[in-house]
Length: 172
Ligand SMILES: [Fe+2]
Ligand SMILES: [Fe+2]
Image (cartoon, rainbow, N blue to C red):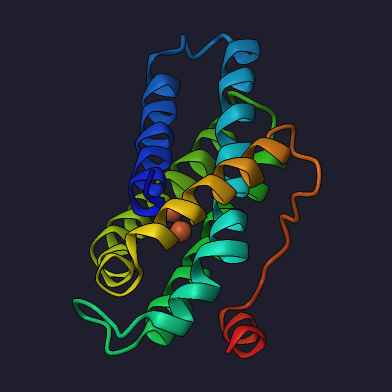
């Protein structure tokens, strides 16, 4: 296993669940709510697991990749994006499933997540591949899987805004 592959797999699952929402009949609020519930939880738990396990270590070993000069810049950007995704999820949860306001909020979450995944995949993940050992990447993948399993039902998930600078200050 490799944490970078594991994260890619989660991203694919998020893309897939957004695509499934496209396929659910728009008048079927029960079905939309079921898919969205699973997706919203995955978005929250995935971001939280990255902040608990991946980014603290990237801050220690990363050197910057692509447009970023340092792991700190990659992390600031990522946590800011995670907060945008959380905002989209919270906005969707404030509206009745299937209404236009709900779809607008789901779209905002999808856009924030698409933008973030692209950046994470071409900056933070390559940086970690280049500077963490295969053993460490394996070990972190297992811990990440356990973390997500423990929070799969939403227990222990904190949906509040982290604040990118506060996060980096706390983990540097
Ligand atoms: Fe991610
Ligand atoms: Fe992320």
